[in-house]
Length: 377
Image (cartoon, rainbow, N blue to C red):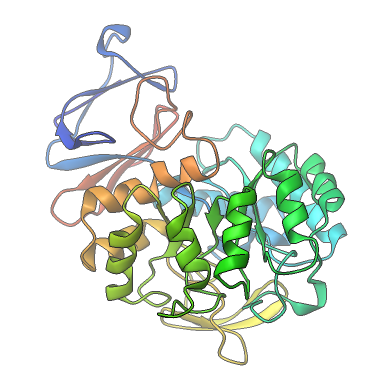
């Protein structure tokens, strides 16, 4: 396959008008393909398939429901919207429930179905979090960081867990980070940590922040907290929910200026109501009311978003983030943050041929290609 005439996203040079070649499901050099099929990309941007490293559900289904048919519907919805790889997030549940989630995710990941997104990992958002900053997580099942429990979950998942959220101030957290930071990416989040505690977590090996600003103390001029500690550690990547509700436009722009486009990971944090009408839904076993773009618990706590990653990327652009930066932060950066940038996240020879053609006029999705096959458009 040859894709010609598109303005193609590159990591080093931004958008460049060049032809892209695909063979046997991978991007290849021109001389390695016979060009049996040509796709005209004129008037389009060609970007890598999006990678959502933190979302809970969509299309009426929740990742944590342990339902294979539901996972398939999630995968189909995500793929239609240009998200070719997913690393869905669990909620705070007891271990037996989390084991079931891991086992079903592993089963889904082994299926070879071109009609749905590739499940490339699991984001274990709970249960090792702070009670005070639990957000929409269920307080009944919050647990102290437990390395052996994590290993049991990782075994059940077939080593699919790529991210685990930790509140570094709780008992056992620093020891957990020290013991497991070489085995999984550890994310600081749902936390009351001050600067010194967060800094210690990053020095010990944590390299990620769960939805920056949300479920943590705010950045202040005398106490910079997790935000300041993340800024001071160049190896730390930070998630940003760009749904237009969780983060204001000025803070979005400030964050890109502070951290740079190579350290921001745009996430959707979407829940099951994404792509669905207003109404009553659930997240982590708790009732959620959705009205427009706002999803809330009974006490008005935000309960994730109802915006898919492609739309989050577009919202970032509409709020002043350059397109080339927004694309990087929704493709390559999330892949790098979960250790899969050698396989997905950019249009480079040897990587999986996942890409999306967007109209240059309005960024609408024209075609989605996953593993070298046109799956939409």
